Image (cartoon, rainbow, N blue to C red; front, side, top):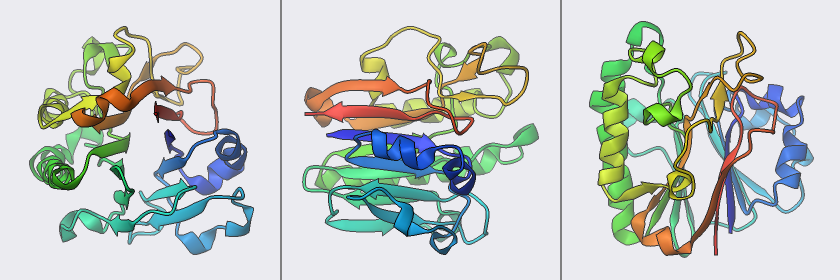
Length: 252
């Protein structure tokens, strides 16, 4: 099974930059999207590649946040949000239940400029999201993917020293990701690649992408029980259309 995740930074804009072609050529069984910035009725679903069903969780605020999943396999159930009202109006989590695992498509809140939302993120969102994943994993293994808005270690960011108190690389955010892994999950990419220089997001400024001055913000985090089935994890840095690129895993 091939699973892919991509923060498209606005699906309507990304469609004009080749999104549908990327989706069609991906050969993904499930293709998860974050930061759609759209409602379902704002797109023409007749353009979706044949064979995919689309499931949305859009923010109440139009043009903001939002997640979407395309799947070739009909899920057993679909859950929008994590069951906590103060988090769920932003359209950040979509869960598809399949026979052998729960797939969670997530767009973690950004701590924002001057860390204005850091307390909300680390004291409210992160513990609630972690509890949600742990509760899901009691029933069957979990695959959580998406833009987690954190570069976990210094290997996951091109310029760690310059960004120590920058949103996405604060010690508070990094520690929360560590807590998630300690709760029974693994960072799938690090099962295959231990080195630096592998990123999934680049600033639009100063030719950052051309110079590979990036951050690894996009992940597939999986239950440890699924490790024997994990055959590959990858970053598709050659795919354009957003300031992020797709990431993915394959399971047998």
